[in-house]
Image (tube, rainbow over all chains, first blue to last red; front, side, top):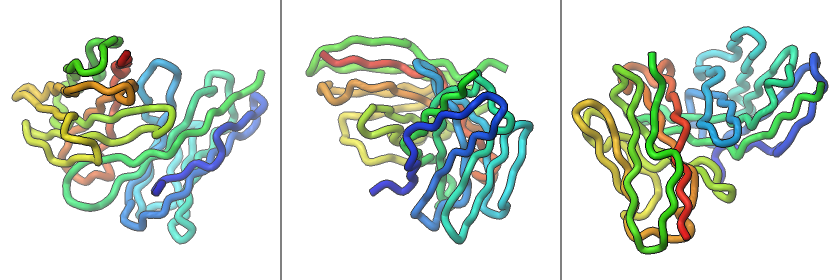
Length: 114
Length: 116
């Protein structure tokens, strides 16, 4: 049972345009969400996060939106650059206890075309 | 500040052998988590160590074990290797304290394990 879902395995966008990556979750106990970018043969690199008490967080070209009622979050990249081409994972953690555990989506391969 | 380091980067073993992977967290971080990444299952949580104690465990068999040392460095061990254990093993470190909403996990480059 996938608790975090990224339904689009791939996305292609023209350089300079907006990239929108989507993520849905089913566990209402999730209260902290993150986006990671991953290049082949490297570990995931942290991009941006959002707590469930917020509905938007912005960092430079990256903005994450959280819709708790729909259990949906999205990552917007504006403007998209060829160097953004990578696999993007959304991840979530629960509020249970003090342990750290991330549940990941299956990833979306973003390709930014020059 | 140096990032998370993992050794070795690549490893080839045969079925039935055991393997030990090492992770050094970011200086000052006390929590180390391990994840397995495979094409079929994606990124899955193995376990987390904090102050030398296992604080959380994922749904993996007992062949997967770990430990953490007083300097926060962590090792992961897999015994009686199976073909299906071929994967990228990632460790992530975080401070491990305070609200989880402000405690980001930072990943190392991973160890690519191939079981023949």
